Each structure stands twice: as C-alpha cells, then as structure tokens.
Length: 73
Image 1 (spheres, rainbow, N blue to C red):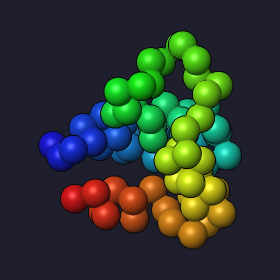
Image 2 (cartoon, rainbow, N blue to C red):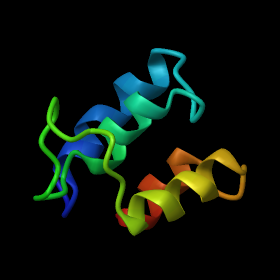
Image 3 (tube, rainbow, N blue to C red):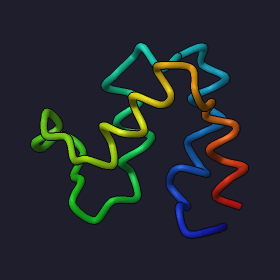
C-alpha cells in the first residue's frame, strides 16, 4: 500500500458499486478517508481546499478516479 491506503482500499468497491462523482457524500468518504482531520460521521459537511479542488477536477471530467489512483502510485 502507498501513502493513501484507505483510498486504495475503497476505490475498487466505489467503482464497482456504480457510484459516480455525483454522489458527493460517498466521494468525500473516498477522497478524505486518509486525511487525519476527517472523522466519518462527524463534521462531514466540512470541506477543505484539497477536497474542493479534487471534486471540481473529478466532477468536471478533467481527471478520473483511475487517473488519480495511477498518479498516486
């Protein structure tokens, strides 16, 4: 596992589930799982700048989750 073990662990099931970038809550749980400031179930409405940039790139079709995973390897 790399520097983002929770992202790596959750990515395949996220993609297999048919969820897409439009499911904001699940996307946040996927992208934020490795952040030391993120606690599932608590303050999930808070969004940091990194999340907002990634969300915009992914939802805008500029980068896919697979490309993001490849970039993190």
